[in-house]
Length: 89
Image (cartoon, rainbow, N blue to C red; front, side, top):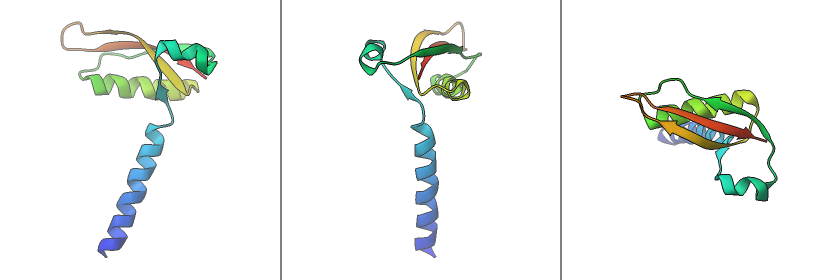
């Protein structure tokens, strides 16, 4: 029984890590070396934590069909965090 539970946990973790690797943040100086093409820009609405803002950016990059993104700005007016990123293929 413990072995079956371990296998299920491993499969779930593997599926989550695959989804997390579908979109990758890159540094701006790597864009030319990687020969990436800009396909758009995304921004977050008000998020209360940096990880929430990053998760929202990743979701929007995936929806736009991008594989890579570069964070171009981040601001914290008050308690909320806002961020903008360029999206690349």
